[in-house]
Length: 210
Picture 1 (cartoon, rainbow, N blue to C red):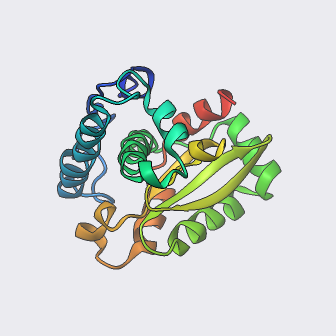
Picture 2: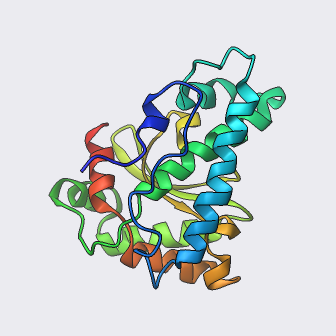
């Protein structure tokens, strides 16, 4: 199955809020329907609409999100546009990283994990600890960097594609991603995702696109 909401990745502006690849109820009990509804319909929707507003009358009116992100990264004068465009992209990616189907990484992805981290358990431990350790808002990521899988964290809206890194998995650790369900227990949120909700098929597709 193709990732949902590819229109926001492939199309040029103006952008649309992409479809969720699951029902808001599907991720319970690990993520509640209420959290998904607020996160998707309030936060993600606002990032998309703000991006559209900010590019009106500019050189970016017919650009893709990825083009906008790469062009505005590190430019203080374009910080607001970068933040909203990157968050629109990050959220599309995050939703597609989640699935209620209980599956395991397939052979190619598991080989890459074992080669880069030594074992799946070591990989999962590093992904959890790095994501939890992000100070303040941000993300934990699994990225492909020169043929090797790495776990990194980014602050606020920052995203791997702004640094020429290929994202494979993304975990949202902004408070709005988990506070209704877990309050200040960020680690519980991340552990629940890594152990129960990662869409390993999507991760493998990202690996194959390298």
